[in-house]
Image (cartoon, rainbow, N blue to C red; front, side):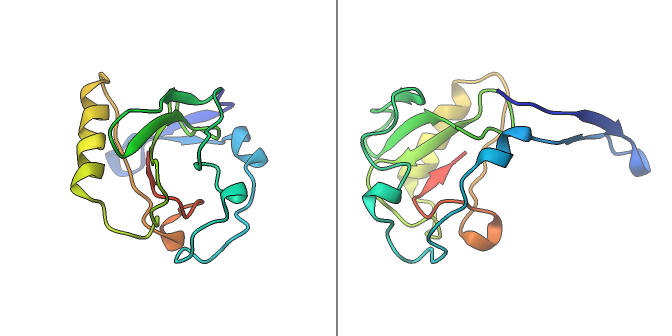
Length: 130
């Protein structure tokens, strides 16, 4: 659930919404700050087995699972997660793009983003698109 307060502003003719997300206050802080190393399985929230309460499709693609985000920034916020560990700072593969396209075709509207590494706002070194 998203607990938010939204206000609409119109600076220079651009409409946007500000959100304060209470759900993020409980998000754990990443223990490993080096995105070039693999997380130990016990610290990797995307390592199998993934919590059944967030699992949508374990076999979403050959390489990906589709799960609900435990700390959503929007309603129905999903993650496309590689089944095997891949670094979050690596480039997107053909299979990653394909999984994103399958996701976008399944929804009426939305967008996908990929925080490629710590400096872009990524919070986990295990590759995932949102």
